[in-house]
Image (cartoon, rainbow, N blue to C red; front, top):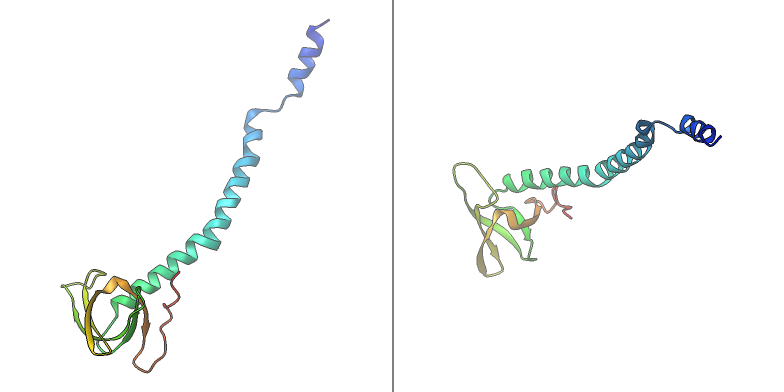
Length: 120
């Protein structure tokens, strides 16, 4: 008589494959939310900022990551522009050399900011 309840319990069990689908869908949904709300917008901002600093030219007013404000006087670039290029800026009476990658904001010569200025 004890074999009868055990046999009925075996028939009521669900297959293991169905139990794994719900958590996988939930984790996939959470990852999709993080990707579209956090990761992807940050990547797009980074790409815009990188393209803006690669298009830096003489006469642009900039703000460095350290907070220095100055005007670009000279850009010492290799054959292809990169973030390691040296940029000479004039701030007040001083001339400073900073890496191109350390530029946080770029102001156009007419005083307006570029669209890639909002870097987190």
